[in-house]
Length: 351
Image (cartoon, rainbow, N blue to C red; front, side, top):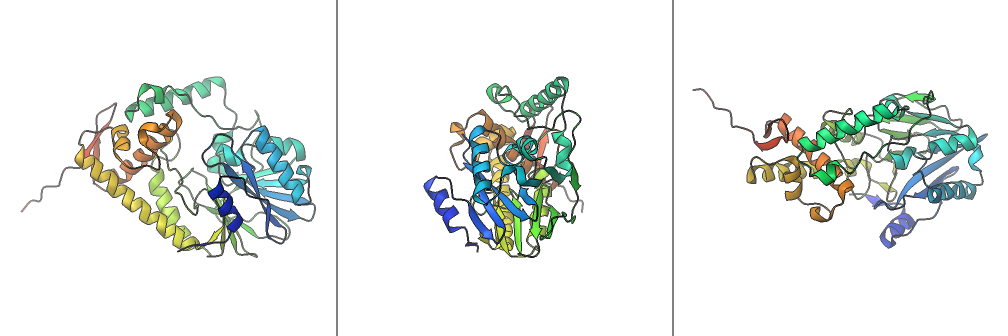
């Protein structure tokens, strides 16, 4: 059972409007930054006051509307974007890292994140990007995705400039040097290879990024070149999260809440049920591709109504569950492309 603490945030989520900038602790604010055209609507950036400026947890989506919201939100805290000294990034996705280059240009801020995610943000040559697109296309074809989904194009990341690297590589348990705060990084891979939560020891708050949200489950997708079995890693991260300090949770989307351990357990139960649902779909439809399985299971919106980008997320998430089921001996895939899934053969016992 969780307790909503971000009441105005939850009301804004319900009413489909942007929540206000809020001071959540002395010297700590939440700043909503819109995500134009995205059903998540906004990302919550957090600002922490320093003796000589501000630290940010995440930065927001790269658009003019988002930049205006971020800079206006920073001004509402009594600071200017030029005061940002460091941006601690929970993970590599564009709604979290997207505005890093503009924040750096305006302030010279350092950037801190996990090395496993920082590796994917390095500059890529056009040839490297074309190779990534071919790998993505090959994987989606193996999953049985139709041509419009395969051909929809690669959604690339906001990347660092050529020759630039992340300033501070954070490992599990590392503490950021932020005078007045005790911000400890906790590695929670799954949603991305290097996803980090941050525990602020003095105020007993936990910044969870996308790892744990109050209402929805984050997408766990198999991305070529990243984690080979991301759902297995995510479930392990959730089990660890259930043992973390149970203070107030400050997620990157939706609203603040208390009950982190309970919410982590809810998400574990959700994925147990999802694994059973997918195993049942494979049993009912042997020789199905991952796309066929995705079309047969329940989603928050009709699968047939999903655009190519949402379809790609759905089939990759379905694949992540099939891999966990396969590792547990419940299903088996066969064939080069597309791979077809059936119930795993029952072992024959020898008397």
